[in-house]
Image (cartoon, rainbow, N blue to C red; front, side, top):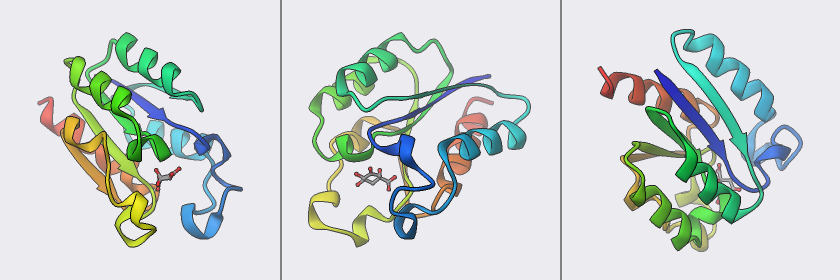
Length: 139
Ligand code: DQA
């Protein structure tokens, strides 16, 4: 099974970015942990700070499932929502922090309705739970 783990803007700074909100794991740590936890999965990993590049990556993905943390674009991007809706691949949205316990502007996700589901507030465990779901639903 092939899974793309895609991360949006500022998530390249995980580990040093607001550790009280996002924890101390870096993106590389998260990616390494996923590979260790799911040796049967062939992972590809991508991160971009640019909305159009995220759209391109979604359109080009030739995988069985996508775990996507759109970061701030979740709250604003119709283009990313449309890209998720346009592709035949199931996408699970992940937010490390509990966006519903934070500022009001984070309470709405433009992208979540086009996804099969959403994991939020469970820290970096959310990535593992999202992959686990994609593996199970593919069986
Ligand atoms: C985030 C939550 C977003 O509101 C924020 O803009 C991020 C990270 C999260 O993983 O908790 O950049 O997606």
